Image (cartoon, rainbow, N blue to C red; front, side):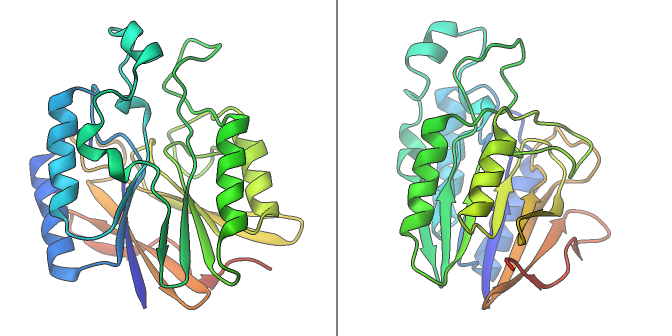
Length: 258
């Protein structure tokens, strides 16, 4: 069995120190095959926050892929940096960002859902550009035949799995294209609460899986991350929480696809 830990929205600068230490200890004790971090490593995209977050990710000692969240780009108070040098503070985590992974018959593909600017007031919401989708689909096409394919991005592509919203522009277009390409699951964060819901298109079934948060900015659930257990072409999602109910499934053990 392959085990992936899916974590999101740690928000260094507003992190929950106990939750961050708890996750590190669980990784050290259980040694998952990889960690998928779906964005918002930082709170305000400062160098100090990236340094601290990068040190934490490197301390885990397992393969890590990191997506860029909306909090990982300088915000309105630093507009020039946001527009012209949004990634200049990423040195501590540069090698992890949008890193495709191959783990025991599983291909993990990055999908960028953040934007430097949008034609709407709330730039925290998601957007999938034509170029980002094209790059993700190329990686899906290149995946070894027979692999499970998980796509990782920060924003949920469509709303409905949680009370929070992402309102991701072109998310529905991206999701349809990923389903048509044979993707088995899309992993995300942003809404700070875990979910796992099915999506069906033309006889193909994939899963939309969202992780909670390890920050102080909890919403409807305690600090949490997802454990995804994979056996052959079947996988299940379990939520791991710092609560009286430390482990509970949020999906049946099912095979994705037709």
